[in-house]
Amino acid sequence: MKLQQLRYLVEVANRGLNVSEAAAALFTSQPGISKQIRLLEEELGVTVFERSGKRLTAITPGGRMVLDQARRVLREAANLSRVGADFAAESGGLLTLATTHTQARYALPEVVKQFVARHPRIRLHVQQGSPVQVADWLLDGTAELGIATEALDRHPELVTLPCYQWSHLVVAPRGHPLLAHESLTLAALAEFPLVTYDATFTGRSRIDRAFERQGLSPNVVLTAIDSDVIKTYVELGLGVGIIAEMAFDPARDAALAALPARHLFEINTTRLGFRRDLWLRGYDYDFMELLAPQLTRRVVEATVKGGGSDASL
Image 1 (tube, rainbow, N blue to C red):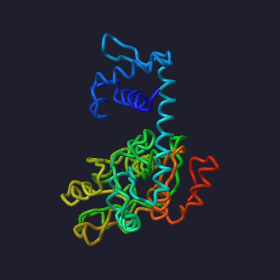
Image 2: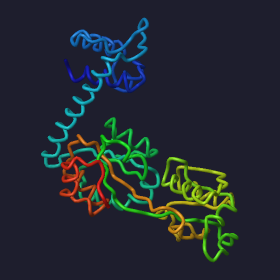
Image 3: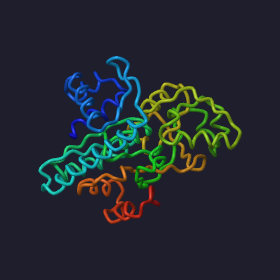
């Protein structure tokens, strides 16, 4: 049994049983992968994949158990490499961070700047996606650390740590009738077309719940995953925007006026997550503390050791 055979097995499963795609991803040949998987099945005495001719059609019950163990072995092998890198005086390394657009664009630039200055030999890769994608990338090992407001705390395999809290803002073009309201209410907001986040992004669930509790049906005319896109369409007069407070810059967004909405919507908590079985390197801890000063190495290690999936802010 070889680690390479396990990698082939897992990649084929991850690619929906498409051996050609797996071969391309692993920079090898399709016949080579098929041969090694056959050899592994013979060695284990377990048929992992059902076949129709040369085509893989399904994963057998025994195959699912083999895949679970293969993924575990590959994670532990990756941890061994991380241990070596951690004790190699930072001769080099890669930290892959998965996060959403809003976090990458507005919350992380200063953190990344400080991290790069402190660890000039470490390459940092920032991978953007939806909160669900961020969680999936952590679970499959594509990324080591993930930052998002939603989804991370739904997975017991992940340790999640609260980083900071934030509120939403309402933005509208200067001179908009909404700005004449002395006290902003949800009822007043519901009178206008709204532009806000996609259903799975940036605290959108809290926006929806606020209107539902008051029996209101907001007219959401456009949704986006990007705060800058939302602001652009608000400037064009498409509607009133609801965005994360960190996404508003008075200097850059001079055409818009912002109204605090902390009293209208629940407070949001952005979390950092990582796999419970991940070996954390020294610079992983440094990144976490730069992001949220309360997340010291002692606090993170105590959370992991305590077996909790979340920590209190």
